[in-house]
Image 1 (cartoon, rainbow, N blue to C red):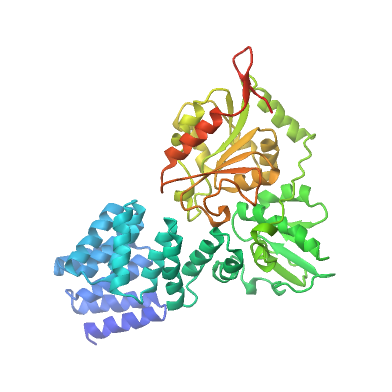
Image 2: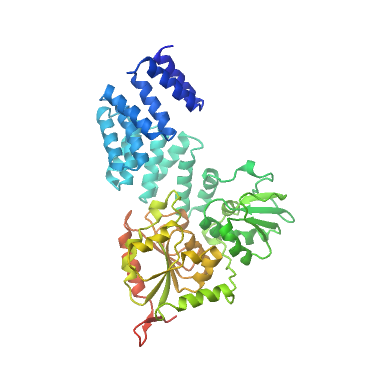
Length: 494
């Protein structure tokens, strides 16, 4: 066989999903011809996709040794630098690739992604638009341009590009979800729910349960399992729909994440609540994701059910322990809980979480007793600066513990994470710091939330501009109604 034969074989094996044999085929092509550039490029791509980045880079650099003007190798190196998080190197590679071959829509698309991550928004838009211009039937470019415009809140401009992406590739989940979330952001729930349900990725598919998924059938006398799918905040937001299903005369079981079990057992004493790692093996007539309930029940802005108040037994030993601990804080100042970061594994964490050091202006406000509600790896951020913040991360074993602590506070200030949903469901005054491109559930241009009446929204006015948000929060803190005691400390007038 010739090197070309082995190259073609490797490409065919890749189409079948056989990566290891494809690697072998490309290597055989190179063995026959050590200067065969297409084999190095394809081998590098397979190695990149199997997390063998150093070997992949060696292949692409070998291509450039043999063919210094190979635009494909520069693009492939750019993808490697993207994966490594080096945006400047990635952008340089993509620009070099374009200089060598200015008709590559995929490279413009890649360049747009890197520029967007660098907040070079004008240049990113130009790159995305050039990709669409070069290949109008390129679904990824249509999606990226539409998503980009959506991020900038240019929603009416974004819609046709997202619609085009969905039309070009039926089942394009990312594009469908982006379009659905755009409609939901606008409050067009009727228009958005169906697409949202079709396009969101499900943790548990139809094969995971033996019972059928509920689609709105009569439930009187039937047994249904309502189950969690994604983050703690999603469960806390949508568990309110349990009451709606109970009203349909169904026997309801609930399967939730372990840290939520104690809180929800207190609140729903009549329900069987499961929190094992796997779904309960009991027999059900139907199962349904909590996140599907607003879709099936055709929720609109006017029909959002209220959050069910959590039962915390505030007279118990655990609640008393929190009161005693907070009572040791200096003076009688306003007690404010603070959360600055969500789950670091969340795909949007870079956008929604904030550097703790950026919050330092808030800590300078007089008369505030600060309590950190932060848990997880970012709780250690408190060590960044010397500040009078009570750290109770090691005392928050589950959400019931956190709820009891929140109950003792006057105010919670948080980024878009599960504590926002917890505090909002408790009816606690909550100030929520939102990125410019906030999640659909917070709608658009509002300072309030129909999901949580006690939550006030502080939105970025420009992408990435957290300092301006913090400045507004500081001003709001300074305007809180408080009175000075003889000791010079502040107490709440509420």
